[in-house]
Image (cartoon, rainbow, N blue to C red; front, side, top):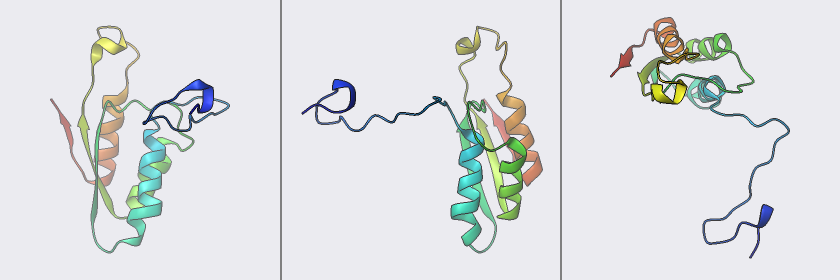
Length: 114
């Protein structure tokens, strides 16, 4: 059986197609988790992010994600997991650590770096 683009096999499934490919959509994930899931829950909540903190293609902004978490009364814990070699050896062009720190600080959470 052939599916989208000729892939076949037991694990083959539809291949998503988009006009503009996106990578890690960190801000969208925090925004949607806060608005769609956590806002309905009573009491204090936590969002644990294990990531390099680098957003690639979110429709939402960092500010919108933070505000959504704050409205949902959710604390963000950012656990930095990054391969700096991926960013050219010394992390040139890498800004994810600052993003995770900022999101944690703004929601009363913590930032953890290994």
